[in-house]
Image 1 (spheres, rainbow, N blue to C red):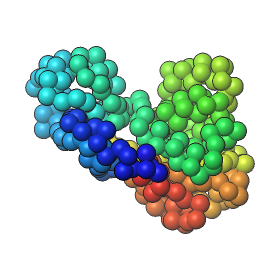
Image 2 (image 1 turned 90 degrees about the horizontal axis):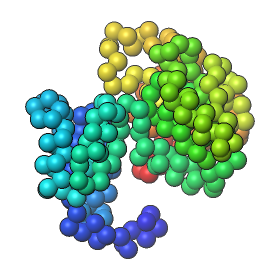
Image 3 (image 1 turned 45 degrees about the vertical axis):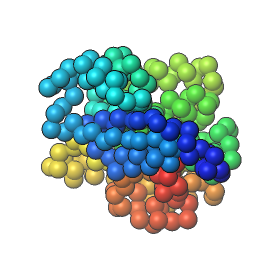
Image 4 (image 1 turned 30 degrees about the vertical axis):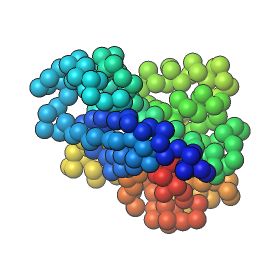
Length: 269
């Protein structure tokens, strides 16, 4: 598709995608709209900020009505159970653009980037740093387990910063079948040692109160990706961040703007 885009300009001709956004995003909206256009289809953006999903009209009715107008629904929602309900009641395919437990399109794009930069999706060590109580970390753990990879998740101690037990159990079960090694540790340097991929995400996810930001910054400071972390990794390690990024927080400007950073290739994918 990337090598010969001209061969795919009409594969979605006549198809319409409804994009339901409860949680805002620059890259998600642009990528889906542009993608539909480039493939010959049409995308409709619908923000439910002023009319929360399930409040004015229940999800069953929203899904059923929308299914009469469009060929696909993509949703970016706060709650997983709302995503499940939407998928259950819709009569057309539903794409998960994000919920509180998963970010599948992001992770598929991430692993495409890793394949492009490293040339393989096996025999790799990945290292994640920072807030591990989030959907990106959960899906990074899931897909690393599926591919049988080694993943060190370096995060602060405490239930508010580490993966939920249900996710740990899910990933452990997959890992037993694939031989993956998914480890939660609290030492950033050891997590980075001999790593092929260094990955981080925002310390200030949507919904974090402004008055909590300084406290979180202090808690996450030992897990910032800086030059010392990159030096502990393999010389050809790549740096990734799903964006948005805040320089001086989850990573230094030196790292994200440096030669090992591929965050904009990652965003493109």
